[in-house]
Image 1 (cartoon, one colour):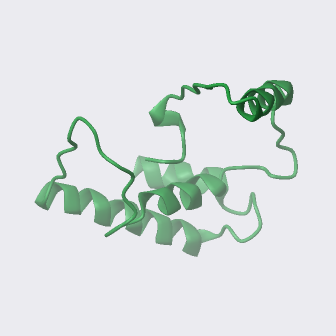
Image 2: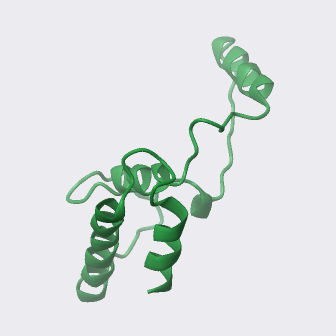
Length: 107
């Protein structure tokens, strides 16, 4: 209940198109995936490729997070670092980007 209430309070009427129905739609997806994992858990091997079927977790992550972003007032910080990466790639150099998996919208 806390997840649903907190998410609803954070997103409803904050961004265009985000209403109670949208929150219900998203929470239903979460509950169905949690239930599925209880019934038939997926065991990740030590290496796996991106999977978009039978359920597209990437699209779900984008939909879930999109509701929380204030696009009118958001910006990309340290843009110069991304420009540096682009130049390095153009020169054929290797670039390694690290991310905390729990904070990205790609579960």
